[in-house]
Length: 183
Image (cartoon, rainbow, N blue to C red; front, side, top):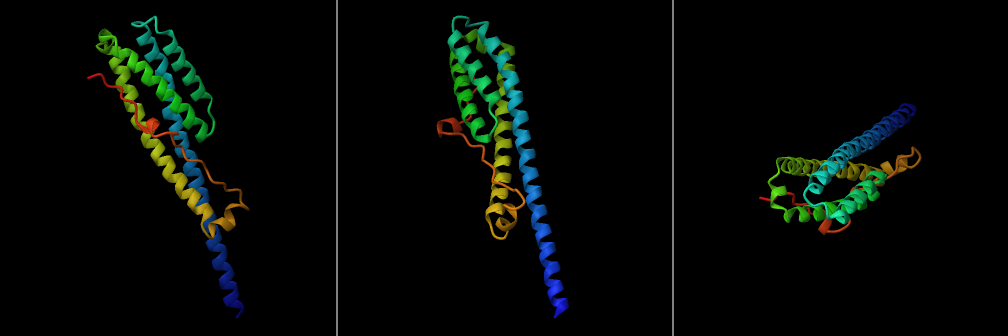
């Protein structure tokens, strides 16, 4: 009888350790995935001044558009949580759409190799951000499920595991990747 009880206690301890380690892996995975998003967002933020500068050379009188893009970029760079990033990135995407709409009025700008290269790079970054966001949200889903499900919910709270926020855009319009092609 004593051996059976000892075996059950040992099985419970092994199970608890395994569950704890799974929660740690998921938490670390979500932090790593967020870091990947952050890297892609920073790459995009660094690209924007070059894009604005290129367009500015053709459309000097459109200062308000440039100021909106600059302000939206600054707001995005100052965001900390996924929810703050989602709002800020939505605003930045809207400002970039205005910048590209402005560029439509300048055929010589649309033919500029530097501008075309920046467009391609931005489009590539948008794809990378979308892929990173999808991966991050999948990891967060798994972590949140493990934290909320039994028996994970018994260990999650006492060991300090908390649900993480998804990185979602606010509106259906913002979920559309901005079109950056002029062909």
